[in-house]
Amino acid sequence: MVATIIDGKAFAAELRDKIAMQVARLKAEQGITPGLAVVLVGEDPASEVYVRSKGKQTVEVGMASFEYRLAAETSEAELLAVVDRLNADPEIHGILVQLPLPAHLDSDLVINRIDPAKDVDGFHISNVGLLGTGQKAMVPCTPLGCLMMLRAHHGSLSGLHAVVVGRSNIVGKPMAQLLLGDSCTVTIAHSRTRNLAEICRSADILVAAVGRPEMITGDWVKPGATVIDVGINRVADGDKTRLVGDVAFDSAAAVAGAITPVPGGVGPMTIACLLANTLTATCRANALPEPAGLTV
Image 1 (tube, helix red, strand yellow):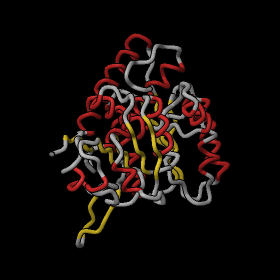
Image 2 (cartoon, one colour; image 1 turned 135 degrees about the horizontal axis):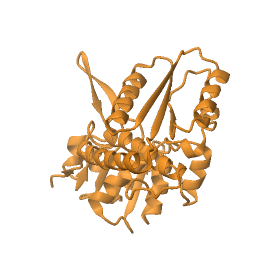
Image 3 (cartoon, one colour; image 1 turned 30 degrees about the vertical axis):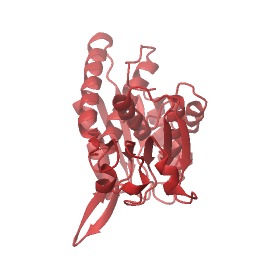
């Protein structure tokens, strides 16, 4: 068996095209330009790259991009004051505070200061609670992207057994909630789960979000299963480094029915779904119909 490669890069490009069309319509018919504000504290190299990419893609789909770069020694009070100003600004429809924050700042406090309606990362406790109870919420971007790709590949997910390996608030837990919402039978596992390989082999859908490079090998995969690899890990390769997922791609691809690569799988969908959430937030703020297919 040779697995179908789920091309997240192509899927994300198609999603951005849809978003750009909706943004152009909003501008032409309503005179509204969606605005996304990104706050970066400090100079973490990975965060810098990510923020630049977000800003570029925001502008490319026709949205207004606002960046706020603060020194690493910024106080909590100063950061919260910035968030408060963005909450009150009608031109800002989405707010993202780039994580991780410097150690002296309380990430939970800062995230929960964001207006839940502008919380396009979907991390605010109100959105977490709404998602967990099946109500309308801002959905975390990475799990949302995974769900979109699964729906596109499978059609209906009803009745499938999904195993999510990972229990983070950012990916594992919301991913499980989304799969439950699509009527999957869901098992949440993690690095300390007993008989983890056996549990993974029972999955029709296997989502790897555990943060351990190439932990899941082909003999953990049920023949024909769909494997979604959320992991992004840098590993040494001689005097260079390379990106790998939480899944050993070659061995898993020999067994799976479909699989996402790393890079080029889940990663591109995260920013595309951030833009989708910003568009959704803009429509909700202006009591306009939400474009179909951009959220759950």
